[in-house]
Length: 95
Image (cartoon, rainbow, N blue to C red; front, top):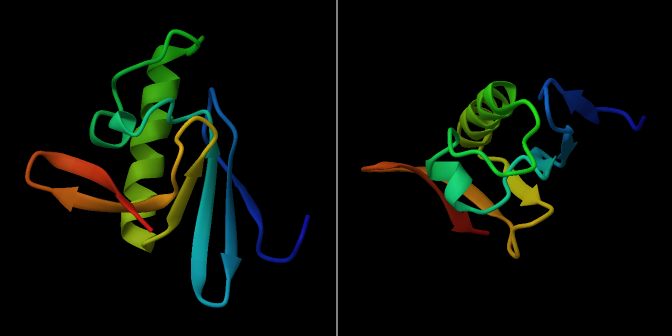
C-alpha cells in the first residue's frame, strides 16, 4: 500500500480512499451501479449478493464522501463528482 491509501470497510464491495494534497478520492468500484445510488443508497442492483450489507456500505460511502468533500469514482458511473446534499437527499455533482 501507498502511504495514506486505505481500504474502507464496505461489505459487499471494495472501496479505497486515496488522499493527495489535502483532497481525497474515493474509489467505490461497483458500490454505485448508477449515480442514482447516491440519492438512493438503499436501491440495490441485481448483482448485490448481500443486499442489506451493500446498501449499508453505500450509505456509509455517501456519508463519508459528503463529509470529506471527496471526489467519488465509481466503475459504472461515466463521470466523477462530489456528493452534495440536496433537498430530497444526496446527489452527485460533477467535479
